[in-house]
Length: 185
Image: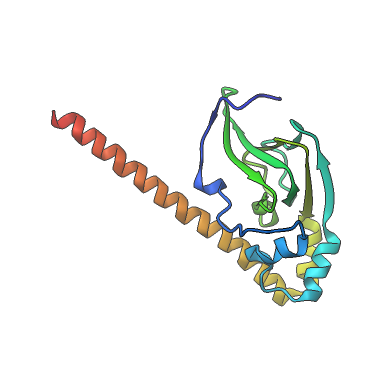
């Protein structure tokens, strides 16, 4: 189902709130900037790097579809990726646009549930993928650092949810003010 997004929604949940400016495409540096991998030893980081899979996509190609099984974390080495939600009526909404150094799909490392949205290459792109079974194996071999990795993923989720809550309350307050102003006339 290839559709152009009908509209763009900038949701805090899909924002990359953790990205730092990365001057080169060194994957180790990108990983070190991500909360799950900030405090792992160099040995474990090397194990993670060795477990990553390189993928290339052409512009317009889907990386995964909404409702696909969530099987891994994606890091963009080059190019841009759009995250799109397809409503039950078939309407496509762009939730986010990610570029080099950004990551997405981290929830799959926790629950392996289905994807809540689709990811599509906006331009030709190269991504590195860490699949859940590979990470699970590393966590099993290095449980102390595995706990830190899972704690880092939890930090991402908590930060995004807090930002989403903040956005919700700002919108609710704005809605309340508009409603009050409308009824006050």
